[in-house]
Image (cartoon, rainbow, N blue to C red; front, side, top):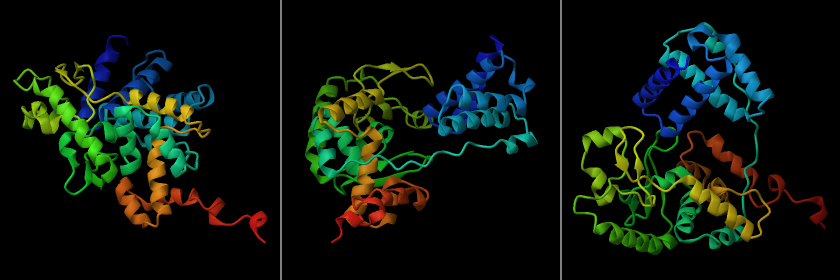
Amino acid sequence: MDRGAPRLLDVVRQKVRARHYSIQTEKAYAHWIRQFVRFHQRRHPRTLGKHEIEQFLTHLAVERRVAAATQNQALSALLFLYEQVLEMRLSWLEDLVRAKPSQHVPVVLTRSETRRVIAHLPGVQQLIVGLLYGSGLRLSEALRLRVKDLDFGYQQVVVHDGKGQKDRTSVLPTSLIPQLRTHLADLSTRMASAFDGSITPASMPPGLKRKYPDASKSWLWQYVFPATWTCLDPLDGERVRHHLHPKTVQRAVARAVRRAGISKPASCHTFRHCFATHMLEAGYDIRTVQELLGHADVRTTMIYTHVLQRGGRGVRSPLDTD
């Protein structure tokens, strides 16, 4: 299996890319398929069946104690392997049961707590988190922003290929515009000397790279938050400049939460929760918030109605009544 496994994973990556899935999905699927093969002593998946898949999923839940969402991600990877890569149409695949995810109320900071955390963030990280909170973006969406995606005239942010491969627009906070303009001006100045043709191109989706081969060197296609160092594009091996690594922001937020003295388990995604909750508190319609967040179903957005700043389920405690 040692010699066959790389070839199998190469096919997995080709199939994933053909369906325009994200690089994160590609890495996750390759990881779980590799783990599945190793768990069964490197036997080829064609020789394994429903029982072996259930064994692996049980191992993840019982021995490794992974979350239900992680277990379901592993199952999705295996379904993709059998249906799309091995092209095995097996009736028992439909019988595999997904784990039921836990329903947790999201962590939400008050407006005061949110501003305290943001105040403890350094320059670029403060600007990124400002977009997470001010525009309701996911961290990956903020980091993937290109210069052309910031529309100062209409005060909106354009998100391309968000979750579910959907495009959407969200509000661009007025208070962030001066900082963003200054940031882009500084970035343009740093890159100007390289615009003689020697600039390291920004990483691009494969389809766009073929259609617009020179776009990666243009100003409009540069990342708003580029990485300091260049890297090799995992799709074709070309040296490119990618966006800032998520861990850079995640670590900065963790430090800022501690320094702000916040006792809640806040993370980067918490600021997206804060955006939704504070918008609803301000009286905005839930359908509007749904569109700004990019939720396919309004029931996903409704979770924020449970954390509005009006006590549990919006009622007054009997201890507070006369």
